[in-house]
Image (spheres, rainbow, N blue to C red):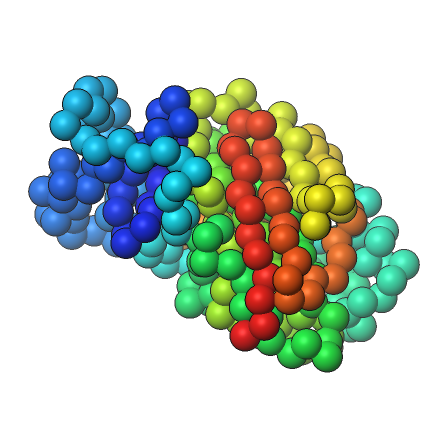
Length: 281
């Protein structure tokens, strides 16, 4: 199942190029959510039975919707800083963030991004600090489906609700990573959430990033230093993960600077494609 948020915080299901508005159908279920985490993601296991028949749900062509982040209320955004071998090498060669060139993810650890930085593809990136280098970083994003506390890697994928594409926009410099990466609109998620059952496995995905029509990044998740299961094990050893928490898994090589007016296209065959524009804040 592919589920999204669109337009004015409507909830949709994507089928055959159409987004079916299921907001009213799900409203009673979401209204009774009392636990931690994002209500929609917490309710996800119950949705397939409720959404088999979409008759009565208004469809809209997917190219006419305004994509919002498919997860509205993540409690945490956890991110991996150095998780592709080739990206580690380019960071060392360019020395773009002096003092942050720890190349072992086990030593570097993970970091948190502010949830206030989260936007959907159609909301775009409002770039600040135009005098400083600011980079795009395309990533596979894991959406946690149920509470995960100190889970083993062997069991970790059972805690995944689904996957999406992400952009981790980064101001380069000497400040702490979370500070430089938590600016409003600097965490993009979309275009929708693809549930885990629709993927062959998180280690079998190719993701790409085009900037103004030119290929800048191409990576395969088989090249992750810490795969998805190990990342969940690592993250949940420090934090209790809740439904809707987001795990940005790291970016492949090819990161580069953005400027207002740029058009970024993140794409994965299994997860869709999102077009994101850059503007001056």
